[in-house]
Image (tube, rainbow, N blue to C red; front, side):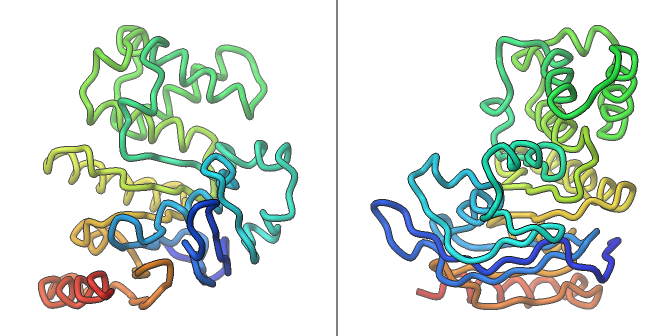
Length: 261
């Protein structure tokens, strides 16, 4: 892993929804530059709510956040929506669990990548094409005209997830939020995607908040693991090489925390 010692993201936040109070209860997290932090917990524990809080998208689910979300020296809760739009996709990338529903089924892969690039960048079509080609190469995808003309229905689920990752890292964000990014993939493709996240972290220095209920994948690539139970962080553990080699007992320990009522 390529973790530095300076803090990129630190938050202390509580979240309520219109029909549910205390979804997050004074949750504290810190993510260093270049670090991979795993966030694990059962469905409904509040993992995705943390992601929505950071991205300031809670309003889509009628949620309200209170507290502090410090990203690169700015409290995101104090920023305007216009300022947040300039951060989303440029400084904070997002990869979701279902690439087939996240990508536009009507537009070609190339057009979707070009639109994602033009939102936050200026330059002629050659520069755009060069950046897209480099990014697709970095996620082990072809960048020839035939592939760029294809639509989502014409590629595999694994390729679609790589396209989604390419869009998320197109502008080399300092933070990538990966929310259950391997849950829709088969075991072989899961391993390939985990390896890709590790390479992007090491090559580009992108910090990753890796959200998952899959303890094996979290233990495989993360520097630290935070365990979320019923809206509260109940444990934070470093992932050392020793723990990786004794993963059975380690994962049993984490499973015990996750099952806590």
